[in-house]
Length: 106
Length: 211
Image (cartoon, rainbow over all chains, first blue to last red; front, side, top):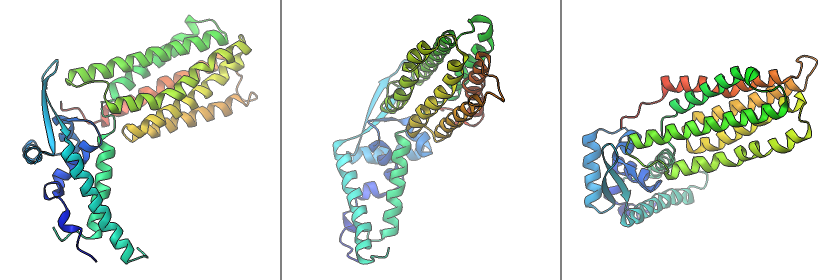
């Protein structure tokens, strides 16, 4: 099998928890911190640290608002994040397609 | 990074798809709205024989009004829930749920006028309306269920099946005398009892919002 596509996988996105965050954000315009925590069943510490990494890489943006009852932190996927995610998906599909091509019975 | 084989890639793609589906569903707690709608339906059904005239027109418009009251109550409860969590109500998942509900609900409402005008006093129309409403409501809930937790689609199927069973019962006048009272009973048991039972089930099983 040609290992060519593998080095292109984005290291920031490829981590399991960060991939879960990016996947969830890609399906909806924005998610609150609570939504993400409930959806992904992650601890506060874990979620916060992964969100920080994604933010520092410019893949995710946060906005803070003061709702009627309490402050709300909302996360969205940036354009860079969306492009990186699309590319990542493309690479995964390429790996699967390459395997199918080399083993037609699969 | 060179360790990603096709199995891992395929699993990653499946996980991504599942997460995307889960993120785009409507996640407000449904138990309060379901219970409230169930209570409205049950109380309205119990009160119906005493408060409205025994004809098809009264039956149809009474239950349309009950349906509207139920829908408004559910809307207000969901809206209050969103505001209490400091979140917007009219989110993309909420819009998807509303647009999935609309066509069959619209059909169920629009069909009333012509049907009732055909035979205003007859019990047959009142007996035919509940099965039709149940099937349409079931289709409506089932469609919305694609953007809601999985149980909603089953709940929709429950209404479709109840509608078909009540149609079979109504089509067999040798066993059950078609009457408006029977139609009220079907509406009370399904729209009232069905929502109430599902609401209570959700109270026990639905994950409590942590927000």
